[in-house]
Amino acid sequence: MLKNLTTSLIKELEAEKASTQIGTGWISGVVALVLAITGFVAVLCLRYPDLLTVPEIRVAIDVSLVRITLHIVLILAFLLATVSLILRQHKFLGFTALLLVLFAVALGGSNARISGELTSGVYFGLDWFILNLTLTGIVFLPLERLFRRKEQSVFRFEWREDLLYFLISSVMVQSFTYLSFAPSNLILATAQLSSIQAAIVSQPLWLQFFEIMFLTDLVQYWVHRLFHKVPWLWKFHAVHHSARTLDWMAGSRMHVVEIICLRGLTVIPMTVLGFDQSMLYLYLIVVYLYATYIHSNIKFDIEWIKPILVTPRYHHWHHGIEKEAIDVNFSIHFPIFDRLFGTYFMPKGRWPSGLGVNGHPVPSGYWKQFLYPFTK
Figure 1 (cartoon, rainbow, N blue to C red):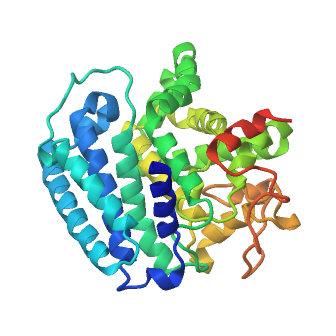
Figure 2: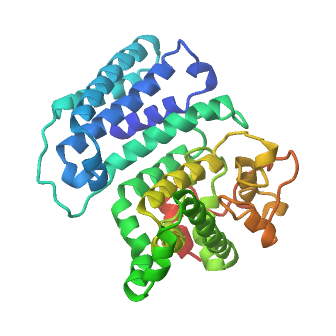
């Protein structure tokens, strides 16, 4: 029964355009479902913060404000689910949203009590997943509708796989952070860099931020290029390139081995050289939003900015399926590195005709893609 309900729900989310118009109850159903999932997860985080929340977020957020917001979210989800049930012929969206709201209320709703002690042990970043998904969705979904490069549904081909990548990379934030900073911590423990660090931290903050952007992009360029050139590394990176449709969520499709290697090496300059902590946090926010932006389905063609900063069209060519798009445009922020090292490619006014890996050898599905690099 659960499998049939899930199949019907997915079918409703991926419904044909004619049945998703205003007045069909699809929009109210989808919004209700998103709000209900958010509310249900938020209740779980309130009840079990020691297990499901990131300590840094836990400390920074006002719990009373969270409870008020959660109360509003659950009410809106209930009302929109009711509207969808009235308007829509198929009731799966509204019914599922309503069911999740009832489960959330049964667990305490906005008045859910905390269970367990707030310890510093193992945790899963379920709160980070919700915040991450909500904030990036609020920013990029409207932009992709207003400035879209091509017409495509929010629930496009393989959206479920990319959502799962999004979920895993968020909830496993503790493990990924620990492994990613391990090389930097080793260097800091063994090298004497106090004089260099003192000189760097004395610089103006704006200059430190630019240096972080420049140095990390330089390291990232060569790591990225190695993942293309070394065959056994390419099999991990091919998972990222297997996406045949790019949007704000597609950039999350990365194999865990690549995530750890790429982050572990690219964070070395900014953590080892002693930059101001506030600039490190600012960079992490900027690079996350920027990586989402260059994978998005947004058509911003501002001529003067193209030689200076990487744009979606520039990075889409990196994902292009054409022969001329192979092993080009490795930079994430500054195209100058591709110009310097001979990998720049930006045909005037053109976008790639297709995306992905030629022949599409990477299988669909998260676990098949996880195992793909380890197969012959």
